[in-house]
Image (cartoon, rainbow, N blue to C red; front, side):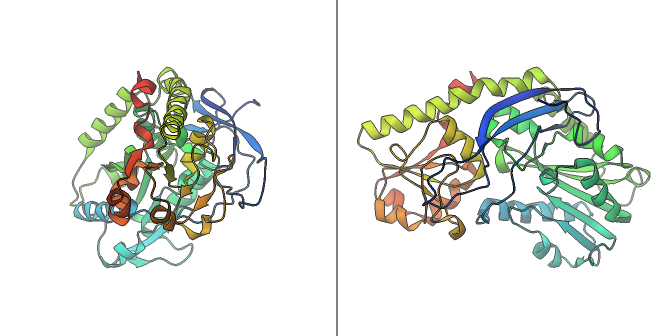
Length: 380
């Protein structure tokens, strides 16, 4: 590996804490008729010893992801977050808002407009600058954050939502590491990044999405201590920082434990799929998400043990999972094939898919969360 420079602070002291060997680009879903083999690229996570940012080492891939369907859980969480942020006084009616969205889709602008906020013009300063899972997609973390804080009008607030590194560590979510996702934030690391731009946290909210996400409100340091009629959450932020520290977000040894769970979890999934086939039970997957790519590859899954993965996004139909021969098919296949089991590759979708596809359970099938298969072994 060439000498690494931190994407946030530029320092070169750090260590690789997770190595998934070579993986296909997780956002490239080849057409079904493309026989492959798909190109493979190194996939590693590096922890900066200076600012504490966990980050992707290198990404030689070219983004090419078919747009996915926005999960109901993400929509509901956005509405909940807007309500809580408004209750804390950060969303005054008439405020101007600028949104930096995720390439995976989703927007808060409708919820914000309903509360009387107006969209700022391109490049115009905004009272509320929102980034929901967008910042992690920038290879140049320092300049990307600089662009966002520069948009914040005097007295304004920057809202950053991110999948918590603490959740990734606690639940062994090693397959959250993927090409195109350049940073994996702890609140401490993000606080350090913000400080370099003269900002500091003012409030934080936690949500169960993806096993644990955080929404951080930050203001210019000279304004953050002022009492402007908002709840002062310093104790809450300190508690969040303490909880994340106990999870080991800054400890290379703690992060390296994820490496131990890679093969254990993948082998358990492979053995379960083989066992289901041997017992004569049919299984389909659900959720052609980027996080499923490395999991299925490590599990040595192919069409013989997982004949197809169902996905709600029409853009993915007629394609296959990267690095495998497993086709991606439409939800109509759930009724047509009447599987004995549906392997859910995204835990957050469980309530949504059970409500949307009752025919699975009516026909005697069951939903099986992939995250629970081998979990005890992986964390043991």
